[in-house]
Length: 240
Image (cartoon, rainbow, N blue to C red):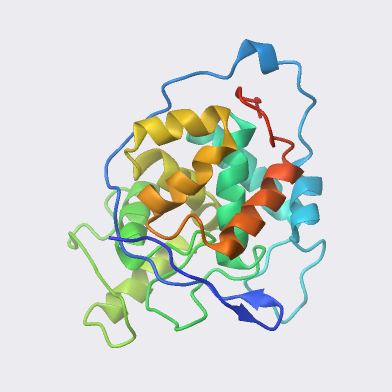
């Protein structure tokens, strides 16, 4: 079951795509940042995000847009909460987020407009149900599972309700990439490898996210993120 899907250009934007659910389960990082990398310079995440295309100032008509000064501290807090300690991991997650949300411009799937698909991770409804329950225990206690892969799905109304709940706060939106990585992917070997080397990012996208990690658009966007985070060629964890 996949999580995110193929994207295609619409003028200047890439359209978030399909997600089917896969890689359930919980997994924690099994290694700690390498002490040999501890001298790395501090990361200016605002600058990194602006370099990657996040707006310095959102246009008034872009109601779902968030600028880099808003996004950066939210991502930093999410990395801390979900034990993401290496730039390599962060670069992979940010590259994915940038593609799916079109540089933090959209919170909801734009095409084909699937009910309940959203957050900057463009998670499908089933994942957002889990995320909503984690954000606020007791929420949707009467709902065990949801699926919605097209506009006419039987769970459309409930899926939209779930997404509305998740998006009530910017935390619900921007903590989702780290939450998914930490709690919904049980590919320990890939996650351990990604802490040291971004070459494992495409494996994460394929095995856990459930879409083509070798897609040309994804590879290009990820490469930009790797450059911005200064992790190309690094083979040991560079601490955040």
